[in-house]
Image (cartoon, rainbow, N blue to C red; front, top):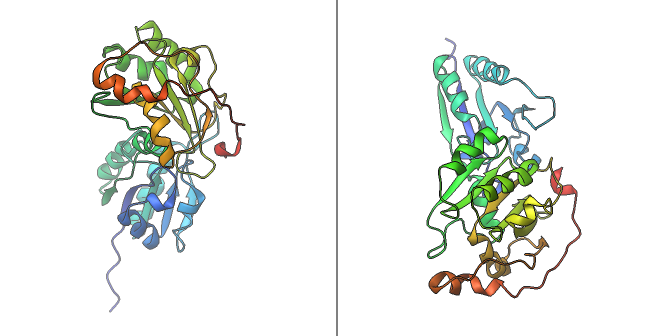
Length: 291
């Protein structure tokens, strides 16, 4: 008597910010058992290689490059699962943070295919942390917002709804729009001296961080890496990098320019004051962080 057919399963897995050591144990277990892995463009090759026994296909999307239609990805997952395969849909960061994981979960549900979600460490939190920037800090920022920066129609309603400087802003998919985003914030009353950072390849040895001001970004002084994956952080917490980076964060591509924010008092001034005397530095920009 032949054994009953194996039931297929789709795992929507977050790959974290890049370094395989930052995968969850559950994510690693799913990769090792997978028959098929469909991975996004920002997932590191070292992470994909952990699925040794699986067939592995890139289905990622990058701005301005040919990519597979979302409906085709749905179909690949559904067909493989119906054949009894263990499918891993591997996404950078967390599958439900700008990863279209919700759309894929709905498609699987509609098709009657069993699925699970394995959360990952989102770059929205990991990239700032690895660069020595806490997105919240007592006396400086009590909230943060994660915003899609790929189009004005995505980020303008968010920044329209908040008071300037009310919280830390973390923009994903925003490197190519850094000048437009900073200009939009300035026109809405954000101080020109607001500290800002651009973090590239956060968890990789060749990762780089640029720090400056909102005004500098609006003038186009940010690094011209429009096709490079990275994270844009705006808010006074960026100043803490001058202290916390000594604990192992990435070296700056350029330090904070001479223009500084207005004077602060009390707890905020004590926490942020240590970064004010830092002399400007420059660092040769690497291009391999975009590969």
